Length: 251
Image (cartoon, rainbow, N blue to C red; front, side, top):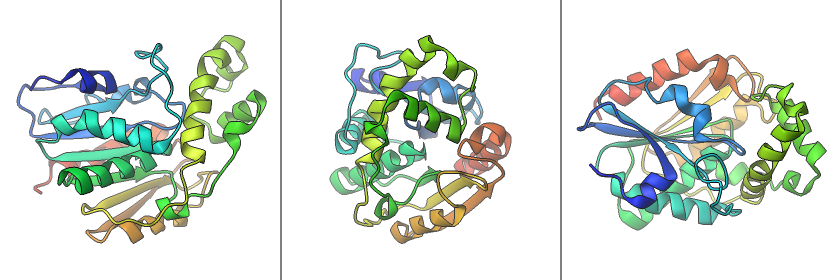
């Protein structure tokens, strides 16, 4: 299948075969990029086509303007994804990407009668439990301090002014999306929801992820792995092994 212009703009594609049997869409965290999830691209069987979200204003899309609301971001991702929803579709979102993945699933189901196979949410409160935050309004030093607190970025790199100049604009734009998102009504989705978190995540206690069950009448599961907010780096092997097994299981 040929990806349209919008899909090519929004997703990096890892294709193992011309006739995939399923698709996995990964939506990165605030300030994140498709590069962060590059090791995931070839981690699954040849029947799984992996798509990784490419947010505007960075890397492959430096000239595209930032988007600063969750609704616009979800609308744009959904529109780009719709032509690729002809196969069983699983979404995985980390941190801000978890809220985005949930909103995309809602749009697919409610507006387009497309029900994904599963929604995987990582290290983020359920929509009705997301508190309003104002980190995006704070100065650059506060944003750098938050990056250090959450981990996932080499601390030495954060001392480099050139790195800060490159990273901070996209981080601030994404934090505007994430911080102004909730709380929202607990609107249920029609697919099973799988929640993931590190046992030492400084952003929220693991038990808070259980609130995702409120939007998951089709089934809910929580998996706690060792690590912090970016547990999915150090626990990549365990996470991808479990995710691969679920993707390959019969629907």
